[in-house]
Image (tube, rainbow, N blue to C red; front, side):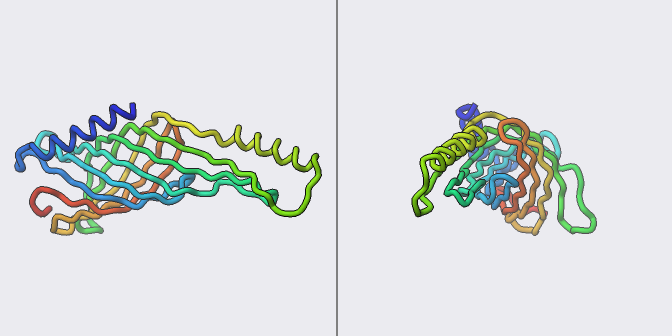
Length: 202
């Protein structure tokens, strides 16, 4: 699945670059992201505009790389650090404008996600001498944490709701909320900018 998403994403780039400008426009940019369990991350985003065929319809590909975050620590020197990334393909549809916010357009999306999360488990020396029974207890606790926080990869479904903000230029800010179901149940907020290869957005 990871290879399939990569191949389709590459095909989107090629399609956008070789399609007639008046028929197909491309948006590309990046976002800063915050996941409830993943902490902060960044990543690129690419959109191919299919409005010529279905008004408001787009296909988007994105990648998110989340920074390492400590998900567990205690006074015994035990800690668990999480790192993760995901890549996905989405179909989005512009369905409403926001009269209060001039130039804002709401969109919804449905996509498929390939995600990988890695957990590193640490047992550090906290100083001083400890008994064999205390050391055994720490290793037992470490094994419990290894069972609770297991690394893994897989595929999930992403539901998204967001808004773009028309600036009248080729720069298009956006915000998005996304919930992923499956490999990693996660709610993520993203904010970023995209640039369009077509004319300025009116």
